[in-house]
Image 1: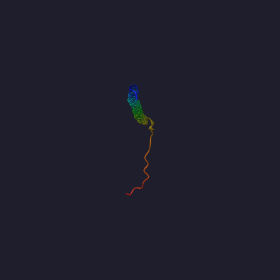
Image 2: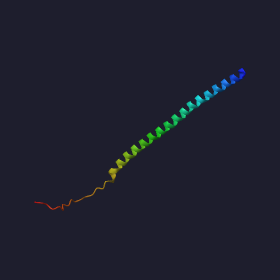
Image 3: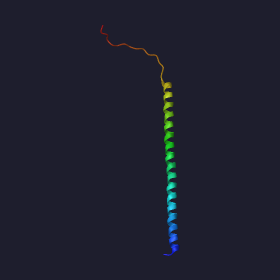
Image 4: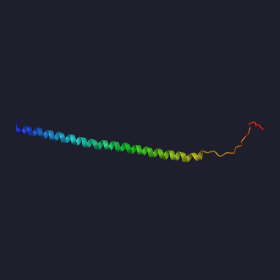
Length: 79
């Protein structure tokens, strides 16, 4: 092997290692972005559910029917 072949092989290995490290870093950023968006979606659905439940409880007072009633005492008394 000539010295120029060794230099080309060493540069190829360094270039390959550089691409490998760059892909790991870029993959980490992509993974962090996906996880961050998932966390934001979960928080958004939680907040939406919280306000939906709060609004549902607030509207429940409006469905109460106000009516007059009479209590009938049909039980036998033991006097």
